Image 1 (tube, helix red, strand yellow):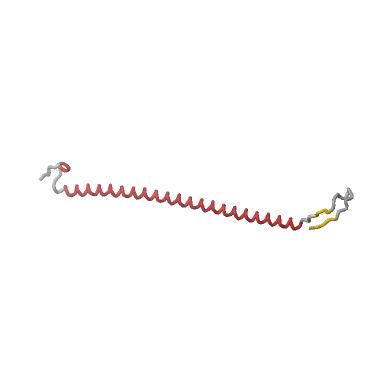
Image 2 (cartoon, helix red, strand yellow):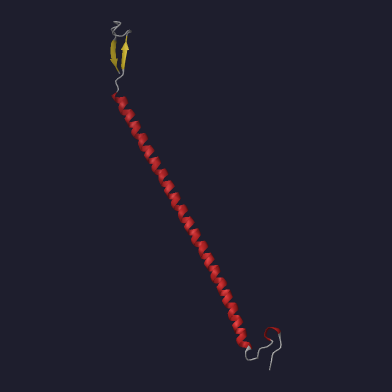
Length: 114
């Protein structure tokens, strides 16, 4: 007995189930292959995003670290300079001449130390 409809017009009725299952397996293989390729694409995107995030975080941490280091060094330098200025001011003796003229003019004024 022969079946006479389009997809399998020259096929025996006993071969029909086998051919249908072959087509179904082929379709399932195509779908599973598409799912695998989609999963691979998603995995690649996830890996790229993770790498970009890690690089950005590392760059931000390094930049923030250098900024903090710069602020600390500048602060220490400013404190050191201010301490030096304070020490130099303490060491300086301020001499004020009271009463006019210098020694060569014979002014003979008194010197007071502050």
